Image 1 (tube, rainbow, N blue to C red):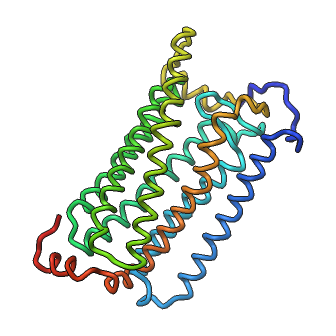
Image 2 (tube, rainbow, N blue to C red; image 1 turned 120 degrees about the horizontal axis):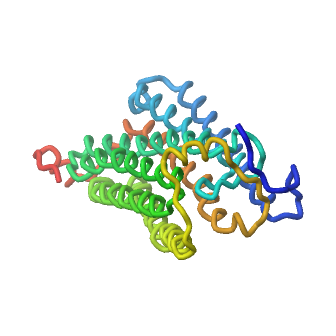
Image 3 (tube, rainbow, N blue to C red; image 1 turned 90 degrees about the vertical axis):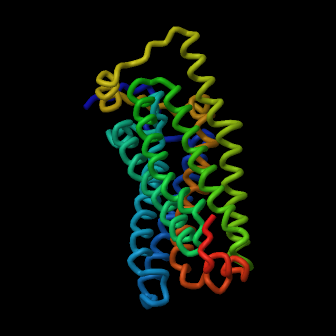
Length: 300
């Protein structure tokens, strides 16, 4: 395996703003890993009957682990896939390794959302929420395929469509959660509202910043007459080529989405584990009209 590296210092200088960003990512990742172990210990020490389905919580913790540790790996060894740039000269920084880790982690994250939506939809009899639960993972699976297409061919259109599908998936998730607002009161309704605000912020970021960024990159490359790789050429390229760069200009557009992704998105994954563990406590917060509607067998 070969490395096509620019001439760069082997270590990041603390005078470089990129080093502070990397330190932030690493610190947050360490805290996220510690939080996962605290959740694991807390759930392991609780009797099974007090959890919302011990096996379900175990599955959620496993899916969360894939996401938490996958994001920590990507935080410690940041890279930009299509550009083939990274911070450190190691084969672990190759795009084929990082993109494989990201694919598994992101599918696990999508599965977490699907499980929570399915649990809530089944509890309330909300057909809209159940439909949302079944839609999430297939949409993200297609998004991952498009991500690989973009990475292999260096065609940013794949990234633009990939992130558009993430937007659609979380719009559907938001609709599923919004359907549940009349069914719950008290702290559960507050949590649903916070989740909806978070999803709205994520969608705004995708639509206003992330997707236009990839469209602009595609247009710029097309205007410059840039050539796209074939998938087979790309497969070899992602396995053998990575360019080390510590230049802020090369990372400027990556910093915002990576910072949010490796912090807030991981916190959401951890929060989903907590929500799953509390499902046995949710019925006490059901609103009376919702209970009556559910018992009457009229799912919406």
